[in-house]
Image (cartoon, rainbow, N blue to C red; front, side):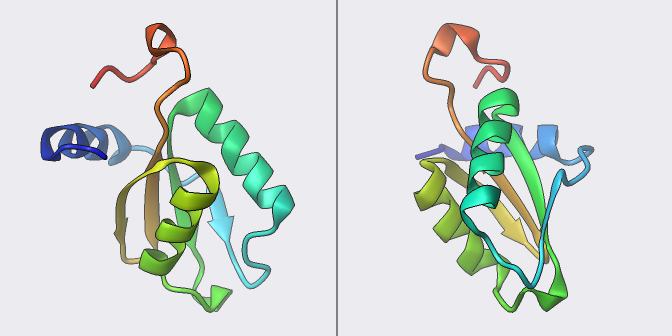
Length: 97
């Protein structure tokens, strides 16, 4: 669980970043989960856009993705989702909280 201070720091890091994934009407399949997991491992913090034709709300999707990917939900606002996953080895962390 992220503290308020950690969440705030992650939001400031994520703000200027572009979304690297879009989730549309196809939803989230095994391939998409695999790509998201790889991106989280490489970047630790990712931003995702939920397209209007997806049929799922961002707040609902962030809970599902956080559970499936064992990640921390940072924020779901509008159609944007921000996820964070701590690295397995803390000494290799790119983002210091």
